Image (cartoon, rainbow, N blue to C red):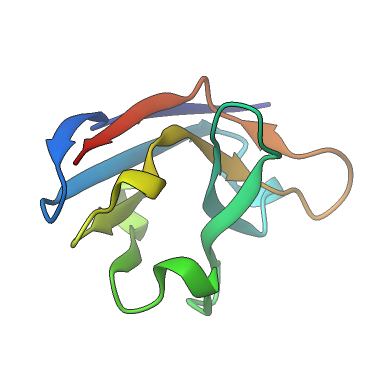
Length: 116
C-alpha cells in the first residue's frame, strides 16, 4: 500500500501562486510515477501534470508555462508549483500515483480557489 498526503491548497487571487505538496509513504517501489489531477464542479477529472520515476514530465496544455512539477526523491514528495493562477484553475486537486501493476493510488484532494 501507498499513502499519499497532500497539502498546500487554499484561496489566492488571480495572478498569484500556490505550491502543492504530495508526500508518499509505504510501498514506494510499486509506483511508476506521481502526478496531479484536478476536478472542477460539473467537470471530469483531468490530468494536470505528472512526473515519472525517471524524471520525465507531462503537462496539460492549459497549464504549460505556468505550472511546474518536481520531485524530491529523498522525501518521496512531489510538488506542483502553480504560478499565474487563473479562476479557471479553481478545482479540487488530487495527488495520483499509478502503479506498475494494478490500480492507481489517490490522495484525499485539496481545494484550490482562484478569485478574479
